Image 1 (spheres, rainbow, N blue to C red):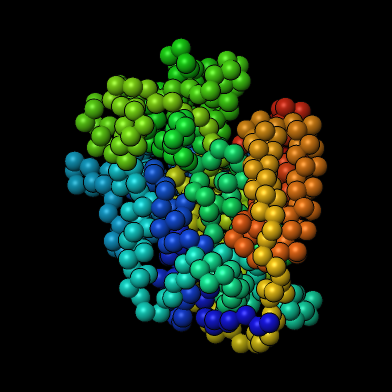
Image 2 (image 1 turned 30 degrees about the vertical axis):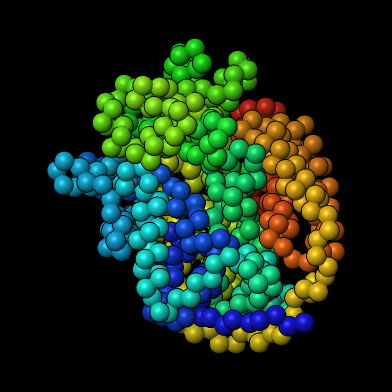
Length: 527
């Protein structure tokens, strides 16, 4: 049976800052189709609180930002990429403002800049504590007003269509578009495109505790890898040190900017403990802070630590962090008088699909931008607020590169139907719910903040079994959103464990009990 086919010049999968920016920049060059799993408002960008790191103050410098990024990256950052991204930041921040993003101003009328962990200067431009939402709203407004951009919501990516799969010549694997599952009509569609952009974000839902929204199931990473893309450094999953610990608070992040403005981490007895671990105390890089909290919790058996901001004036807390203040208050915590219970949670992947300086993957006509990509910027640990910066810089470079390539002739016209569209509806949903839960618990317990060879071997054995079970389910049953997400989580979990097992050292976010030292020569883990 043939599936419905949509033709477009540019296919953008995902709609965070990367996908929306690319769509806007390419709309004048041809037709653009944006496809998102849920809605335009459901992305990691939308939930980003802190801001965008960029050199916007005359007392700051590119060299300082480069240095801070390299130190946080623990010897794995690609210096040429770091310099490229840092130098492009100010121009693209101003472009975001031109698109309508409204950033906070200081008393002198200039943009207000805050400081976060690992930064030596105030260089985080923000809009209160909802920067991502403000940026996304501005870009979404522009996208919705552009007649050259088609938006498809509620469509889950299944796989990329490539020449290796449908018209192989074994000289160059090229992307021809993608298959999607239309959840409303419960059908498979194919979108044919000259250029395809993976902007699907990360895979925080791989772990039991995460700051990510429910749709962060590694879809782009999994379909890119299945299409032949190289992936790198997946062992470097960043755990944010401070997520709100409350039974009714789901995935809520307490921004690093709270510590930047004076918040202090304390144990359950009220003792500040971060000075025991790092000279920067509570402002240490994220991996240091997350590991310190994890150590304290294992040592004491406590369920959480405290973040104390009571030293700040009440009006300053309410004006600087209104969203965080309201969320805490909703759960019975008044930041002005109470300490905030916090725990680490999976937050951001420093690894992903390998790209060059123009966001190209090793599959022709396929780009990867944002958290789904591994550009070399973050190394072994991302510096706070460098993520939105990276996404907008590489979105700009990908769009520029695609526009320069012009009309790509010679793409084969393929007529290939989706194979299991007529399969029966699932009759054992418990297989998926059990696999979903088990993957996340295995990853949290064995591939979390602190790892060991024994834990990783146990994780690999179990994940391989789950992959086999999910594959059997996949071929027996009709396509559904649930099976697509579990299939992708299982693939990304397997890749992550393999990456972690191959790194025989501790570096940045990746800490191994068996290999506590950092080797003299750092290199990327590439699969």
